[in-house]
Length: 202
Image (cartoon, one colour):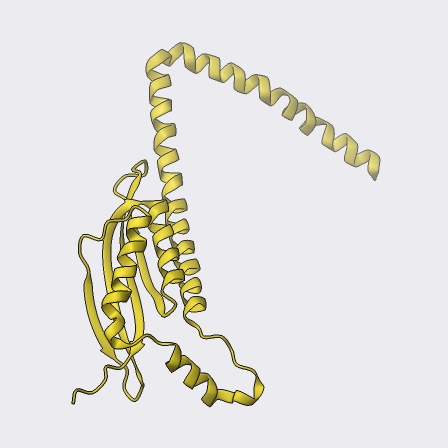
């Protein structure tokens, strides 16, 4: 049986050996027929194919970064687990004690702006929206930031903000790049800052 397999494989091996010279001959023939115009066209096609190939990679990188930053935000906002006897009630109490006061929001926003400046990100405008949690002792303060900066700067700003403000979480981030080769990206970042409910006015 082995001898039969070897004999059957020999024509295929000869064909594979002749394939290289055949391709080289075809390439020389096409060059003689088309010249520089053909070469320019082939180069254009190659560049177009490269651009199409990089677009899905950029989208995949954006999705991966979004997932990574969301996980980092949840981990940064989660309070440290309490040991056995303290139980769930102790954990809830520790969570509320960990939250900054409602009056500290301006100070928290000032720190956020400082982190942005440190990473070369200009915060030209922002949208703020308070969302009260029913039957809860905390307030969700949604912060939406449209920014335009270098991709690495935006990424460093998001990570730095989550590390600087422990009760800040990343809700979503959307990247947009007008051209693949452009250095800057447009990003729409949504943070949520958790603070204590405001004290009742007397």
